[in-house]
Image (tube, rainbow, N blue to C red; front, top):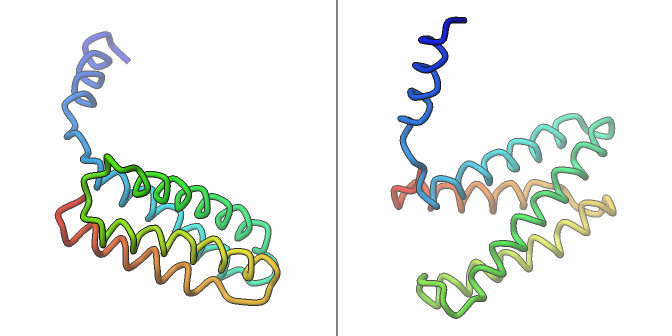
Length: 124
């Protein structure tokens, strides 16, 4: 590779559009949701993969809960409360899935609904 092509490549990457915080949230949630789906599709053989995805999903929702609990968060109080509730639901339901007492489908549905909301508001 020539010096010219390396420079051109470096500057073209810098010219990529900057992501919005909403777009970043969407992308992270989409990746985690995709991993939940992939692990679930493998059935018993995918339980370790599903467990790792659930762990990451729980971490994501913990971060979201901490963010909306911050009094400086600019979201409307009602929306912040709903997001916090979803974070609590995610924690409780995740434990049930890990104990094999429930399916992962509700976690996927919650994430998908949030992703739709992020897209609808021009997030990604």
